[in-house]
Amino acid sequence: MQHHLVSFEYGLGAVWGYVAAPSAEEILAAAPEVDVHDEPPVWFEPEDLERLRRRTIVLEDGSVVDSLLHRGPRY
Image 1: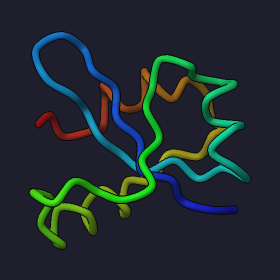
Image 2 (image 1 turned 45 degrees about the horizontal axis):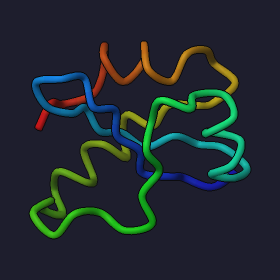
Image 3 (image 1 turned 30 degrees about the vertical axis):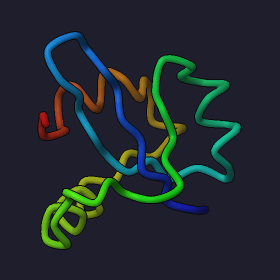
Image 4 (image 1 turned 180 degrees about the horizontal axis):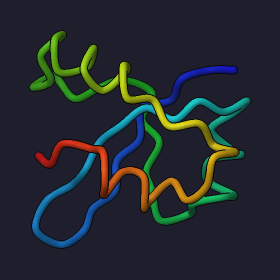
């Protein structure tokens, strides 16, 4: 299972997180409203990415968007 960096734009900003899934395509099939990123934005600090990685969402556990909104930091 791979960890994919995703974001969800909600109008006033975005929430970010990592999703554990076999592929980016499976994430987009389950949650077409998120964006999957190949690389993090340059403004992300390494400690921010590590914090997100510790809160990784597992695709099979339910709604990616709901999990991001409840767990993810907003930028």
